[in-house]
Image 1 (spheres, rainbow, N blue to C red):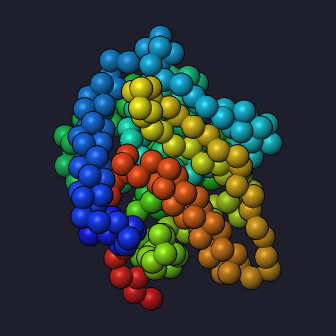
Image 2 (image 1 turned 60 degrees about the vertical axis):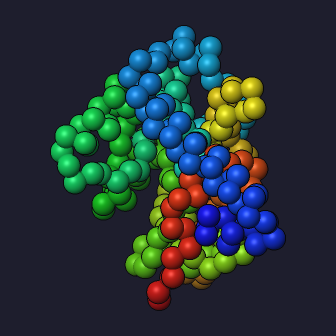
Image 3 (image 1 turned 180 degrees about the vertical axis):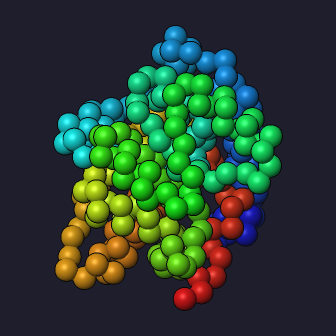
Length: 245
């Protein structure tokens, strides 16, 4: 609720509580959807999931330099990743690993079954560049706080915070296409996976400034998506921690 009040300072308490409840219900639904993943197949995906904007993906893939998906914790992202893998998308997802071995096995085994490959967020640059060089897809989840040395200060909903600069750094090095990819439930319960147009990379001689500009650009895209579907975003995350230089 504190996060919501920060993002929507003009809202009254009833609006804040309503959105907070929607968000937490969405988190619960996402957990349930994870348990569904081992049992889905191509016919289930075709019946229950609609993919929109795939032409943006196809155009980016034709360039042959790999595709970076800019994504966030919206609705059932894990279900979306599994569905895309089933549909033949060569997906690599950058993710954290759990300290518990059994939890790692549970969390990743079902999703790997459908062809999704995972890249650890620890020293991941080589594996990311390798995947992009093969013209495959790497998903960057960019909606969580990240401080130095791998984070950079950005504005999000009008407030300072930190965001990972990895996508901007990789985008510069690999010259890959970057486009938004996110999922959401419509009011009729139809589950949608949507691709947006490619986000153009703004190059400049000053590398540090270029990385800052692009990370802010990606963060602004994430904010616009959250504003479209605020009830399906994970507001519980401490997004606005103090960024200590």
